[in-house]
Length: 419
Image (cartoon, rainbow, N blue to C red; front, side, top):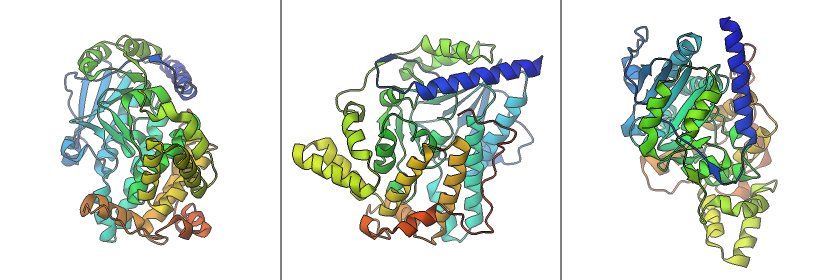
């Protein structure tokens, strides 16, 4: 009976996720939001990392469990021990017949600002590439777990949600944005590429919005997230405690029941006139091209003809970004359109190892240095211009680090990807 129930739940989850994937639009919608403040339960005692226990808290009430990312001073930036603990918790919750659905949120003013790029920077400078590999293997596996989770998953994105923070939330069933939500994939600004599944979910956005977000690193607010489909619901943050209370009363594994609860507290939204979503025709016209150079040319032509402030700002963002990262990221998004979530994660893993190895370029460490460590905002990219980025350099980014380097191992034979 339990197996049949879980099979039915998995079917409902597939439908919910597919509906989310295909309903991306720019329409005026009624939406909703969620948070949690249920009473605390005991944290599993078999986890031997006290630091991770403190950085990922657990709350639960009845049929729900919530993970709380708890590094507020670091904007909940994810490290290896945090993600390993999340993996452990989520697997135990998935196997428990007493838990119907799972929630996750962040403490402070962020959901999660991404991976801990400063820690990665210091590991690389110490020559500890193996620890870097462990981090990315761990987080990419957790992204896949979220994307194949057998129970409904509710992510409360009430704050900064960037990079890896988006990766551990967007593949799930429900993503609730608020007026405090700020989304971005700003990796090209630090000499990296959008990862943790970004090449999958960005490539499935309407038109060429994904290319725009990947290449500029520009932010979206909560209204824009729900309008384009990155979030499934929108609610003012003041309603979150009430929504959490109502979710805590549910005894269900049925995503449609959770959906009904979320919709009861939704707020009507519509992007304002300054939003990039009001300029989607321009975005599609400029970012549809096959090369970054052609995209830049299209933007320059449009800017010279119209003197449009948005277009000029977009050009300036592209000029700030790492040239190699721009070319690599464009190809990554284009390949993501034709790949499944697990294929995107496996490819991103090869790209990540190449980007961190310094065999092609040291842009990652230089980008982090300039923006986060020294904060001089003057990175010296290598190569320094788009014209000097060769096709061979881009091609190498997509190859394994060596013939002896193992790829990313995902449990694709026992966990079916819903997308």
